[in-house]
Structures are given as C-alpha cells and as structure tokens.
Length: 239
Image 1 (cartoon, rainbow, N blue to C red):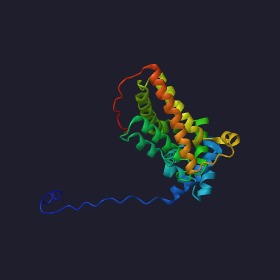
Image 2 (image 1 turned 45 degrees about the vertical axis):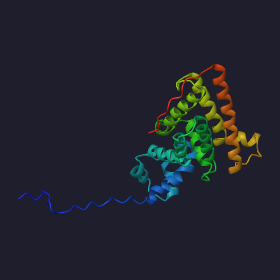
Image 3 (image 1 turned 180 degrees about the vertical axis):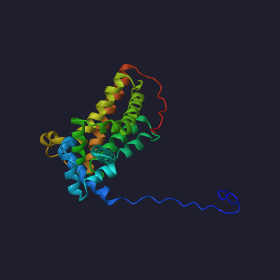
Image 4 (image 1 turned 90 degrees about the horizontal axis):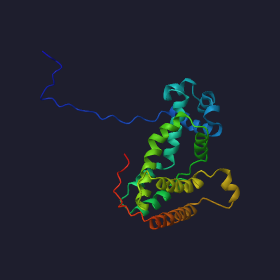
C-alpha cells in the first residue's frame, strides 16, 4: 500500500504561518548602527563599536546581515523608508490633474521633515552616502529613487508637453527636486542664513505651497512660450 497517497475523505488542514516577531538583537543592531554610521560615515565605522552599543557579539552582524555592508544597506534603506517615500509613491498614483499631483508630491516629501519626528541622523546618514558613495547607494537608487524619478519625468513632461527624456523635462524635474532638498537636507548653511526658520507643520505647508506655486508658474509659462501642446498620455503606475 502506498502511504503517500492522499485519502479522498480526509480534509487537509493548512496552518497559516504567523509573521515572525522582531528579533531583539537584530533590532538593537539597527537602532545603534544608524546614528553611528551617520556620525562617522561607512568607512570609519567599525562593527565592534556597533556591537558594543547593541550589547551583541561581533559575530551577530554576520549572522543577521552578512557583513558590515549588509547592515549599512539595511540601515540606509530603513532610513529612506522612514522619510515617507511610500507616501510619495502613493501620491504619484493619484487620479488627479498633473498640476495637483505635483503639488501633492511636493507637500508629501516636505512633510517627512517633521511628519514622524525623525532624528537629524537620517539626513546626516544620507549626506555621508552622497558625499562618499558605497555599493548600498546603487541598491537604493534602483529600488527607490529611479522609479520615482522616472514617474516625475513623466509627470512634468505631461505638464510642459514634452517627452520624459527631453533635456528640458529633466532640467525642470531636477529644479523641483532641488527646491525640496534645500529644506529636507538643509545642513548648516540654511541654519546660518535663516536662523529664525522653524520647520513647524504650518511652516512646512507654506513652503510646500510656495515651491509648488513657483514651479508650476514656470512650467506653465514654459509650455505657453514654447508652444508645446503634445497631448498628455496616461502614465503607468509605479510597480
């Protein structure tokens, strides 16, 4: 008799797998690593000091993340996710006029400044990465930045009536991004030239409206002056 055959009269009960609870050691490593990487940068940070702060054995990093770069990559990606880029993606998929999507996009990105009360190490971490790129940056670009940038080009191209890969479309997109980053990643310069600036929720909304008004005024003027009246195509959602 073949015991491997299923009994037609017997019901098979499938148990759903419950999500694994967060591992305390892994979570401590990530919690400690973020500020340390932000203060020292990737190269100057040692696994030993992170593990000491997390009360973990030095082999724990290899166990949970493979190596130091694996830990750093996870920290960097978690930091970006904490900056509400999911909200940015969702905004880009809204069924609204292009001008309103752009306005909502700017607002969503600026709200990340104080939307979750993120410590300033998040900005410093990304600043370190941009100044001294590591292999983690490529993964971050491919997974997060590139799809959003591609969708932004399609959005702005539709507003000015040019293809997404047109040079003017790219120039306009980078100009909008630059205005937002001036507040998202201000560094010491903005604090020195505008020390009275307090990024309260009300002020963030005012800045978002200003950037949107400023940008849309130019984009609409550009389209009217250059006579670019290409029909706007429906843009695919980010996958």
